[in-house]
Each structure stands twice: as C-alpha cells, then as structure tokens.
Image (cartoon, rainbow, N blue to C red):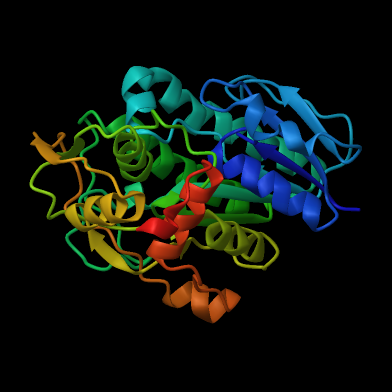
Amino acid sequence: MPTSLVTGGAGFLGSHLCEALLGKGHRVLCLDNLETGSLANIEHLRDDGFVFLHHDVSEAIRIDESLDFVYHLAALASPIDYLRLPLHSLKTGSYGTHHALGLAKWKRARFFLASTSEVYGDPEVHPQPETYWGNVNPIGPRGVYDEAKRYAEALTMAYHRQQGVDTAVVRIFNTYGPRMRENDGRAVPNFVGQALAEKPITIYGDGSQTRSFCYVDDLIRGLILLAESGEHLPVNIGNPGEFTILELAENVIRLTGSSSQIVYEALPVDDPQVRQPDITRARQLLGWEPEIALDEGLRRTLASLGRDPARA
C-alpha cells in the first residue's frame, strides 16, 4: 500500500486528491492548518487508511512513517485569502515548500508541487505553454501569491538538480467543482452563490477577460498521472476551452434559472486579461486531456449543492 502525504489536504483540491488516492488504495496522511481548508471536506474520508494531521507547513514537518509521495498543495490560492494574509501566503510558498521538499528528501519520496497558471501573470503569449516565462508584477498585490509559486518552482528544481529529489511540477489552471467555498472569491463560486441567492452577479471589468475552467475530476486525474510519471519539468493541467467571464456569468444564470442581473465593478490591479493552457505536453507525456465540458461541470456542481439544473 503506497503512502501519500497531502499538504493542504482539507482544502478544495486537496480533499478531492485525498479521496482519489484512497480510491487507488493509498494510505493518505492529510496535513492542513485549516486556515482555508475545512474538516467538512474530509469528514467522509475518515477510515483506517486516512489520517488527519493539524499542522502549518510554515513550520517543520515531522512524519514518523515512510512515505512514497509528498503532494504539496498547501497555499492561499484565492485572492480574498492571499490579500488578507500576504505574509502567510509568502511563507507557505517559501518555508512551506522548503519543509515539504526536505520531508520528501528525508523519506526518499516523489515530491509533487502544485504550482499555478498565475506564474504566467498577465500573459503576453496566448495560449500559455510551459516554455513561457511569464509577465508578473512582483510588487503588485497579486505578487505575494504569484511570486511565492514562482519561488516554489525554482526551489523544487534546485532540490531536484542539486539534492537528487524526485520531483514533479504541475501548473494548475482555473478549476471548479464541489467543495469550493461560497466566499472563495473566484468566479464560479461567486457567480453560483449570487445566482442561487437571486442577487446581482458581480463582474469585475467589462467581462471580456477570458478564463479556462477545468472540472475538478479531470484535474485530479491529471495530477495523479503526472505524479506517477517520471517527468520533472512543469506541465500545464487545465481545460483549454476558453470563455469570457461574461459568458460564464450568462451560463450560470441559464443553468440556475436565476433572475439575477449582471453588474459591473472596477477590475482588480494586475488581473490577467487572458488565460488558456497549452496542454500539448500533458497530452504527449500523460495521455491526458479534460473530458467534462463547462456546462456539464456546472450541472454537477449545482447538483452537489442540492440544486437541480435540469430546468435550465
């Protein structure tokens, strides 16, 4: 039975990863400080093969048993969270990654870094391939998250090249699905929550900026394939289907049958105008590509909230 440690395991993505690893027969150690994660996300996972550890990755990580995989997902990924806790965001990306890498080296485990499409910043290349170095403002308000992830990638590659740690790096593009917090601050939970409450749907900017939305089941399948591969260089995982934010809002209104109106507010500083993954490497190296279209993913998300989207 392989043993996997998942930092940030009680969060949105972390809990889905823990669940998938358990389904593959892994023993799973879920490590989380519950700053943004929730015990409710993992309540259904409590069994003999699952252990929850309350711990902040900015402090040294000590695990007594052997490990085969260290999945480092701990991060303040929502703008609401990293703007609220900028120093903690930087510490999680730096100290947290250092501690997780040190643990993987000690246990001779495969280390998996969950990086982000935000390393590309407001891109000047579209769609974004892994060879693009990005256009990031290091001193802007988003820099505490973007640069923390860029540093984490550099640290991971240094551990691989100098220390011989077996590492993998994924760049995750926008992902959605069950267990996202309603107050997460990102487009899908914002729009769904507002639509279900019959409140105005808030779009920042004119809505022409684009995003690519990957359903969580597709993403987790890609993460595990990459972790179990021998690849060390970054790989994009995301859905290349590109939508404007306005199109997303209109889809949510249609699927919920909401009477919500769309309202517009000022665009946040350094908000990317486009975002679309080039997934050529994922297709070639992993045989992976997403299978769930946006409409179907939104239907599944609504169903997880006990709402029937069939009337849309």
